[in-house]
Image (tube, rainbow, N blue to C red; front, side, top):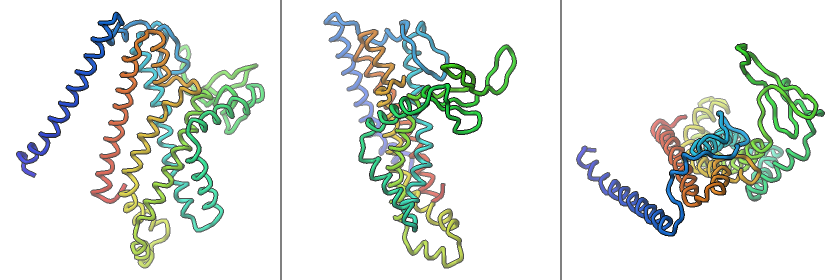
Length: 325
């Protein structure tokens, strides 16, 4: 397409985008001015004030004396800390369940169908609460810790894994050990984190399973029969014929599920996991800046969603052009 025609095509979209941004800025300015006119402190200057509250777990060093913007950054990092692994795990599990729904044997097909029909019809919040209470009520104390794998411990306090660390200039692996009422050494994953991760993974996986199943079934039967006729084995048919064609139908709705998963992570506040919404609620109570805190949360989720959509669209374009992963 000639540059001039492309510019003329993009110009109306750019004008519309600028108009929307101007409208949002005007709306925000009026809200802040009205709040100030009523004697209510308004603005985002409070982000430089000391937070005044602790955050239970974080990816990097944080304490209550640091500014509020650092607290919001910690909450955002905690959101990504649970959302990104959930995306990976739900994609793998959902693909397996989707393939199981198409299995020729009745048992795996029935098991996968039961999972899908059960989990997708129970609200995510209830599944999250169920996971949390199961982890904190059914698991043993540290003195009777379960070892699901060598070097790991599972208790009411969470999952403890071997971790790499340095102390007094010496670096090495640290393994968790039960000591009295707690566990020392290694890395720990809190029960709140595990509950959110499990609930998000399974809830999203059953929807991804239906996307995978629909994508595979969209491939023409004639394509599969032709591949078998030239002597390709079942795995080769799946890898070289079914998967490239199915991906074109799978990737776009899969991106929507990723967006839903990231936004559903906000429900983690129900079990006390200190993600973005939890930090925003605490900041709101500390400062009284309800409008500003809500705007920050909305802006962060909007940015994460747009970034996710951009990455999925780039991959979708690659799949659409080449027909392969």
